Amino acid sequence: MAKEPEPHRPTKGRRFVQVDFSATPYNDVGSGKNKRKVFFPHIVTDFDLKSAMRAGLVKSLVLDRRKEIGALPLEFKAERDESGNPALSEGQRVMLRAGLAKLRKLEKDFAAIDPNRHPKMLVVCEDTTVSPLVAEFFATKKA
Image (cartoon, rainbow, N blue to C red; front, side):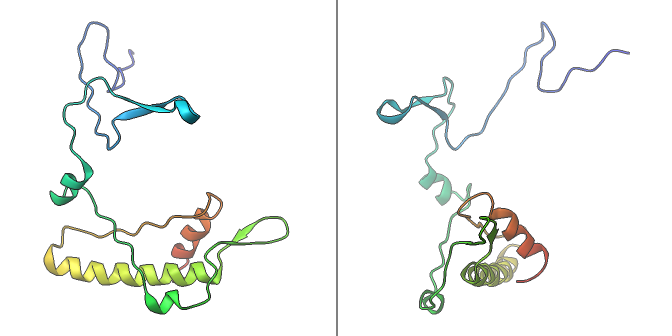
């Protein structure tokens, strides 16, 4: 029984078209002072981010600054034990809870305007050892 070719690989003698959608249609080449951008050879359109945001084609970022949280003496980096194992700090837990509260409010606001649009929350961690702790925090409903 012959194996079917994978969908993204053409069989010999057949033509195909590959289309990539990229917010960064270039590769970084070189390093240090010699680092430069080499744009892809076939760019169909160059649609800048500001225009895409105005057209509603990309998500817009909203940074929430809260005076009541900003006044608290919070540590926003993970705590580490003597072996270097990370744990979420109280400051991180406070900010995650605040972010979830804001997300829930936005979900209600969005539902009233367009139930097919759903806001998202982006959490930026200081390194990859902290991100599983954030996922666990959300999964265990500590929020």
